[in-house]
Length: 612
Image (cartoon, rainbow, N blue to C red):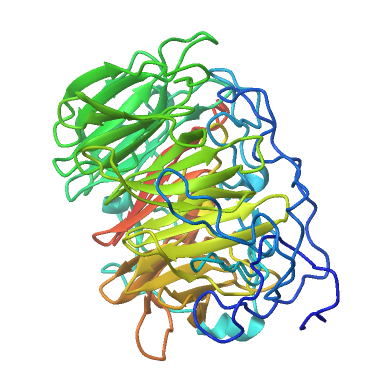
């Protein structure tokens, strides 16, 4: 509905005056429909360790942060024109509101929502899932000097289940297996605890998870039980898979298994203290880096680095991450690999090391208008996020791409005041999710190689990717259930009374090109784009195992074809991973836990692998 020009502004802030009304990028957009009742506003996080005691980025808007209409100009204020150039001279987004963001703001470095002390127990997510429910109300964001960020639709990020009777008959049928009946050979090879010693507690016979498997269902190729963890739980971060070996970290150990049968590939590595961070990526020469605590006391820091060779299990170089300046601590850190560079994120800076030798290369420190680098994302490129001018009228965040070898800034993009950069949904191309907590608005934007906004997601659907819990870090790369390929972005919708859908969004325009419904009454999540198809995972139900399906990306028919139907006899185990990693490769589905409960009553599964 078009707002009368003489009405007071509704919604966000910062829309420039006298915007052109024609088409093209940056033109005001029509308002999305408003939800009947927006979600309640969560309490704003308070600054914690790592930030001076002054108003943080979630302070109440100043006198100029007045709401503005969707796609309507408003009276000029300090944010209706480009801000003064920062150290890199890039203008930023000047935003109108959108619906409450799909990502509830996660605390970054220095903004803990939990008491910040080393070893603080991390509560499991509510509802038995690692999913981070994102409440979102997208809207239009237009720019004055450059095309800024647009957010539209009414979006909620939370994976739920449901079904629609008319689609029940469309459920794909799994391929017939070679044998109709389970046999002795169906018993998963070398099950047991995370150490791979075979057998369960006390050396009893291992479970036969394929008992009761029906014709046409996949097999449990192998599984591993979790190592003992303290009653408060323990992290099990990272899962790295190549054509021979699956490597998994858990509590104080790193395990390796042959991908075919689960036999130990090399002896487990035991570290002196609990693992507190890992590189989500592996280097080109199959190396990873893990961080572990400096001790067991409340004063311990996550500052001990250990390189590990995935192929051999050999331990390489070690290093200790020193604290930075005042308030810049290594109590918690994040690790990112970009090419041959390891970037260690502290609370207010980053330290770069040569990933092959452990030699310190450079530091990414405070710059410009009190801009503190607080989060990094690595992979095919190195992305940095900085919080600038905390507690001042010019408070904002900046997105940068760095040269991994030198730390030099390739480009900078300023976000408007109030917007927090929460996730990178893809690095190549770069797709970034941000949120304004005060206005309960969000944005998903795709950037060009030079840091310009290419497109912004334009949908009124409720979106539900599977994102982990970021308690003391921002965890830019912590989302699953999102895929990019063939110039398309694939996002799952929320299941609200019926089976959910996957939306295929054009990265060129931000518009929906097609959608496909889950083949069952359970939620479906994108996994990866492969060979011109989208590979997706369908959640298990109480009686049926999960599925891996292939969906054609081109053409007009996008009917899912079942690649793997997991056995219903282990659906309860498959559904028990409340915090998880998923990977589909070489016809196998790997499912591993990223958080151990420490519950001694049940032998918790660390990893389970399905295949034919």
